[in-house]
Length: 358
Image (cartoon, rainbow, N blue to C red; front, side, top):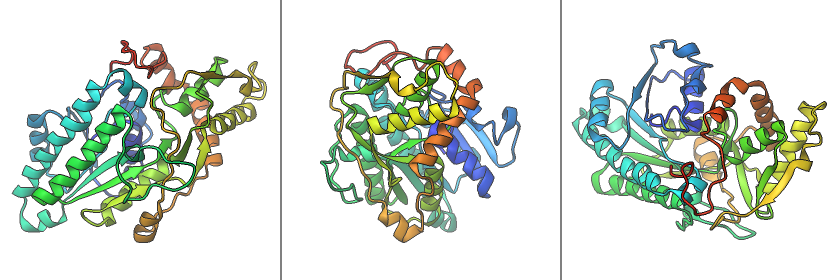
């Protein structure tokens, strides 16, 4: 697995160690948004586990990748490593090109060489699962849903880099016969999300009594997917997905950003009834929108339900309540991130800054 110290990757590792028998090699570069403490629940204090190994490496380093493949002889690759923050991609796109495109290319080449070296039985069972985003499809109008057949129309440097990686994976399957599956997910949220994304930004601003920023008029719509539901989907796709296919993964939870923010404020009110900042909705502040902000995303996840039997289990109301409670109870995790300045300052206005350089 690549990117296992990130938000979705760490959730996937926690799920695997709790609910599956899979052995895991976690290959991660440990960028600013990676945090091995996110695995403390299943690996307390970094305690050794005979089903888990960590490899500190960059997916763009082909020599390191070849060594990891040779050392661990995996049966599958789950590729989650990526630069993922749209605002950062606007201010500093270079890191997104390097990691999401060049890194995916290097990983595909390493996987192809390894796959070709396998004996027939293991070769037939090998899988390369590429984890991507619904943002590659661009922006929807007021109606309709993204399906697996939707045309690609990325509008940000981030989504363009992910679209490029998706197409590389497709090409390596059709040209070289690498057995791949691809998944495109909607907006994830939940515990351990790096506090530069919307939901943790709102929670921590409300908790601290700071202005809660809402881009534009807050009318942009997203489909929200609880990260633990996504982890279940990823395992289902790896184990049962058809080679060469793509699967959309969505939460069936469409909300305008302003309505999502208000629901977080209500959860803060309920969990912090004596807060000096109550009601937290009074902290909402509308700020300048980011360039090229897509209006609406919405996922048709019927294919994965029909073929693999997966469906989201977490409503957005329950997921928000659980997420807010987690951040309030786990200051030990997010406070050091704030103190080192890794998640501070407004990004995404097209002005390259130290914080936004990637």
